[in-house]
Length: 438
Image (cartoon, rainbow, N blue to C red; front, side):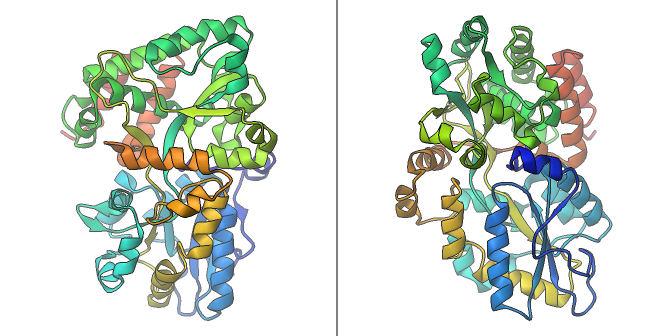
């Protein structure tokens, strides 16, 4: 999963290519490290875009000699573009990422700066963050990236009005969820929305089921490239359950053509066409813009992923993105690196930044903000997300980010075939085991 970005349906059409922020479009390209060239920053379109734009605008106004050019991209387009640019040594000064395997690939190819000395000289920066979140910016115990936006657990969202219509309660177990499928179908309502065209939303189902059935060790073995790890019984059972859910008609008709990047999946929920959706908490930000009446009417419900009978995983475990991160390109000029460090030190998560994140309906990954959250108009939702992250025994980074880019891409492709019921769980496992290093 990504930072599953959020933007309006209208914005989506316009975001087929990249979208430029007001401060963008500088004369220098992202890889321009010539003397005097400003630092470059690439971010994502969606709910966080105005927060980042405001921050950079304020920075540029106060620091005319250390300007930052910021550009914004649609999520999927960004992933391809940044990997290509960084691979060619032409990445932006600020590299936006998710930590995990992609960050490790940057570290292994010497594309990002070691921030150890920076944090030693600026201990207040390190203290700013929730430790468990900060840890995801490390590779082999060394910090190469700092959190830059919000805590992003994946949650089960539901339409309260539709549940009331059929006289049901949100599921607490997998059996409960399966039992809801025929009830909603009988009422002419799709049980679940899914943005299958984007592929990454499929992964949330596998991540949670594997955890609930086998616990965190299942994915740890996969990440550690343990031979045959993809054939773990928990993986096979998870994929089998997914295909049973698909066969039962659990997902809205045509789900494989629904794009999450255009927010079309969540629109099915708030327009009353689907009863539930498994998505990152970032969709709350989108709904504040796209469906404010739905939120104000109190029709949005949210809960944790159901438990699985006999499973080893703790029902409080969560998956998602602890945060997104900024790394500094090791290929940037000396001046660009200094600008990046100064920005991370004094502008990232300053009072205005934190205020803007909370106002957007998200939780910053920083300490000491409980009072600010409690005072927010969205305090109930924000405290739920904050508590989920704070109390989770295990907060698993999205698998497509935790694995190497090559493994992650193949996994999403194979999983798409699982949802389309074109391959069996064993065929999936066999294909993925081939990606494990011998």
